Structure formats: structure tokens, C-alpha cells
Length: 485
Image (cartoon, rainbow, N blue to C red; front, side, top):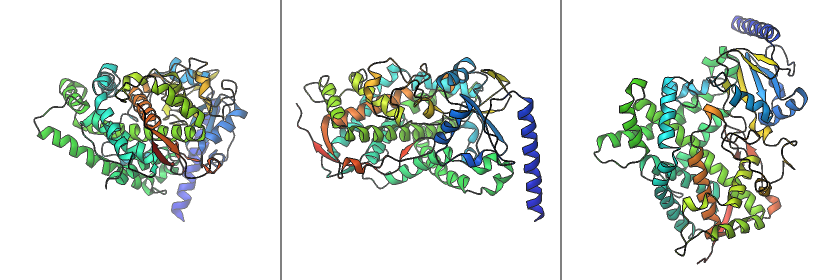
């Protein structure tokens, strides 16, 4: 009873001090909320949707308070531009959620790392070895091999779980790019281990955690989130550690990303970029790259199966660039306008990261007419921005043609569509992810016709919130091989 009284007193002090801080600063308007808990009851299991509704009342910049955490939420393109472009440096830090402390080396996780010297060294390495078009071209044959091998397997199947299929391909494309080997397959014994670990890692990092808003509860881990995270991160750490250890023991070099990072670490010891950072980086890239890519593929194929005329149009476009040998080349499909439009529209409607990873102000900053204090959490509701009716016609409909009529791109300069973020914290795997998605969608559509085992109106379009939006139920389809010349 005494402990409960102490906790209530502490929470009351936090509430009063936060409220006074709110009044003294010139924060944006927002819902008033309740003592201690703030606006907690105004958020649903899909906070991106709840925040979008609140923003309609309170404006493009809105202040919400959850426990001891005050956040400023941006819900329009111009609001996002002010944070991610005009005040990029001031807003480029990160809050550290409790779940991150479950990592073996949380200080080395690039997603949550502050923009310090080590972070800049890692981003430089990624710019050289991951986002560089020449490097991606040189390793494209490895990703192509993975797709070709899997297509032969699919021809023998009566039905497939497209999400699981896309996951196995994406995981092996990532592992070939980084490690020059396959780590799983659609029907292997370890595929479910990888899938569960990676999906859980994405889910717990995006999940609401009461311990984050009431720090006094962190030692109790009341929702068991840290323990879940520790289990899956530990499993992935062990897997990656094995690959890196084997590479260091051997004498062969493959010219893949692991070799490049090892060489880069030897050249940049002054930045303290070492094996710990390499292993943590590979875990981050495997998690984000595999999950995001497979989710986009799942949603793209879902929409194409619901719109057969669109599927046929993609197939016709791919047919025009496929050579006589029937081989799809990654570099040749990147410029196909309708395929590109389908992928963009998929990301707009089924946003890869509905709430971009939160930012935190490094110093006091002016956003619009408001003054936001140092160490304030900033949330960009990219999902709401991509459905803003004043920017998007019929925003809830799947209409790839809209991207044929405009020049809006996903690279971070068009703030009405920022699936990979923008500015210095933009997703470093954007270019690789786009190549992987394009190659998979083109290959699935070119080599197979697809039938649903049920009526189209029975399709479950619900999603599950996390760092990414996963389809709530698997997409199972019947592949019919096409005899194309």
C-alpha cells in the first residue's frame, strides 16, 4: 500500500511538472487529457488512425501527452517538411524506448543511435556499400538467383502463402547481398524461426509500452515487452554472430557487404566502428529490410489479385522488356512506369511505417508558430499525410494511375509521400528495398497467373500495427504457371 502511494505521488509530481512545462512553452494545441495518464484513452490499437482523427480537430501540429511523455505530432506535408527538412538537424535525435535496451548492444543500434560521430561513420559506410547504384548493380545477380530458384519451387506447389514466400525470398536476397549465401527457404525447418523473430522484433518496437510513459514501471516490464524483445533479439544476434565469426575464421573473400564493412571498420577505427557495430547493423538491416519488403509484396499482390486488370497491365509492361530467354533483369524493370506506380500506390495505401520512428529535439526549435523545447518527442504521422484528401484524390482507393499523372516520388523530397522518411534519418535501405520489391512483383506476375481460393469479397484487408503494418491474415493464392516465350 505504501509503495502504491509513493508511485501515485511520483506520477502526480510528473504530471504537474509536465503541465507547467507545457504552459510555459509555446507548444501546439492538443486534447487536454486526464491527470497522470494524459491522452492515453484517446489512442486505439491503431494509434496512427487515432492521431489522424485528433489532428483533424487540433491542426497540423498537435501536442499529445502520454504519462510523462509530451509529444508533438505532425500530420500534414508542410508540418513534416518543417521537421525533416527545415529543422532536420535540430530534430534528428531519437528517444530510446525500453524495448531497445533488450538488444545485446543497444548503443550500437543505428535506428535509435543519436547523430554522433559513430552514427555518421555508419551512414557513410551505408552510402558507399548499400545505397550506391554501382554496388547494387554488381550484386544484383545474387538477388536474381534467389528469385529464379524460388520460382522453380513455386511451379510445383498447388497453393502458396505469398507473405511467407516473399519473406523467404527477401531474407535470402538480404543474406546474399550481405553474406553471399541463402539462410532459409520457403519449406525449410528454420523459416518459421526467422519469420517469428523478425515479425516479433518489428511488432514490439512499434508497440505501445506503458513502461515508456511511466519510467518508474520499467523494472517491472508490466506488458512483458522487454522480455519478448530480449528473446528474439538474442536469437538474431546469435545467428548473425555465427556468420560473422565464420567469415573472420576463413580466408575467402566474397566482395559482399560483410567484407566491405569489415574493411571499412579497419579503416575507421578512430570512429569506434567495430565488430559490435557491424553485427548490430546486420541485425537491423535484416529485420527492417526483410519485414518491410515482404509486407509491401504481400499488400501489392493482394491489391493486384483484387484488380485483375491491373495485374494484366503489369504483366504486359514486363513482357515488353523481358528478353528471348525469358529472364527478368533487375536493372531493366526499375524504370517501368506502371509497375512503379503499383508499388508506390501500395506503399501509400498500406504504409510501410505508419508512424515514422520518433524523433527528438536536440535543442529548442520553432515549428510553425510554436516553440518546441529541447528533448521533446516528435512523431510524424506519415500514414495520415499519405491519405490527406487535400493532396490525394479518393485517398482510400487503390489507384496506381495517380502516380502516372504526377511526379511524386518516395525518396524524401515530396512530403505528401514519405514511406522511407526524409532528411538525415531517412531509411538507408530504400534503394535496395525498391529493387527487391520491383523484381519480386515483376517475377510473380510474369511467370504466374494467380487465383484466390475464395471470393474476392472475402478478402480480409485488416492490418496489425507495429513499426510496419502487417496483413492480419495470410494471403494464400494458387499459382498457375504461364508458358511465356
